[in-house]
Length: 163
Image 1: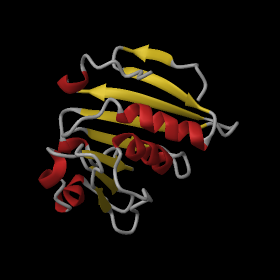
Image 2 (image 1 turned 120 degrees about the vertical axis):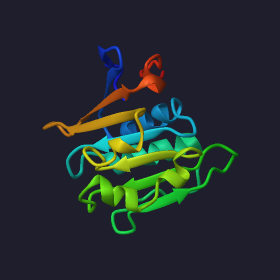
Image 3 (image 1 turned 45 degrees about the vertical axis):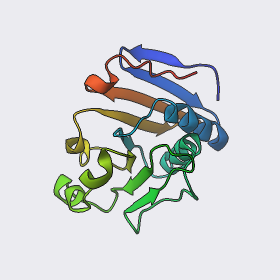
């Protein structure tokens, strides 16, 4: 990962990733911010690196893998290997509304786990007033910009640039 992290605002930070390995490293850094009950909503175009980032989050949380895109199963639970929170990895790509997200009953695991929803923008925000929104942009030079935005009181005083 390049060392060009830019502070955008009080609760927003931009991480720059040059490679897939850097994107995974960014995920491990994000995992250091997360605790049970946290909701992470990922957005970005197809191929932007959402699942790659989740792989890094899974490594950082030390959960059982492998982490793969749950597009066809919609949701996977990865238990912790060391007593930490489980990772609930959701792919909302095929879900059309917040009602369909509600149908997969994420409320049952939300309080004890870290829940990461790929393609969650516009459909998963109702799960929690407090969430970390991660927007990944794939640039023409094949690098990625990873925008972290903390929403709600949980994230009001969290330094989003984990070093």
